Length: 224
Image (cartoon, rainbow, N blue to C red; front, side, top):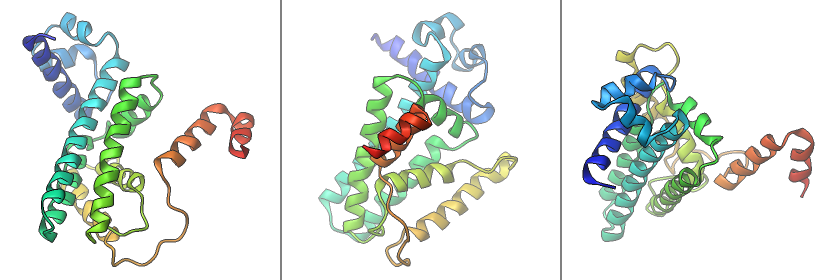
């Protein structure tokens, strides 16, 4: 891809993500093109339909979260300082909030979850893998409790990143940060033992497969 084409693509993705945050994922694509400073024809050459744009935006945010997780892991490999472990954890928290906050979150996740898109699947798995390795390292450093999985941490952060419906934009960011503090406090290793069984990414994927298969096939799959 030429340098100017790559710049146009990145500009479109950043503009689309911002508009998804502000207006939802159904924002007209010509509005996205105008916000990016390109023509509608340019947008459609890069992204022939809304699904491909949704997928690319999701991949952008996933890649950015993965980069933060991998940077945190590298920093932990270079030092044993407790402050560095805490900083790696805080960097991941803020990256998830920054990249996934907004009313578009659940719609984007639900929309892209149904896409038959190997690149998106790979991005999702790569990001969860990086978070899994970082969570393991943070548990070993005593920053996180030992009875939660990386999938549960990721799911909690995504839930926190979405402000409550009807909350004005001026109050959303402080509310998200407040909720983030509550979640972080609950993930400290000093908390009481949790009931129930930890949920992994594989568990969630199996449940999604059963749901997609329908009640009869899903029950048969669960029995296998």
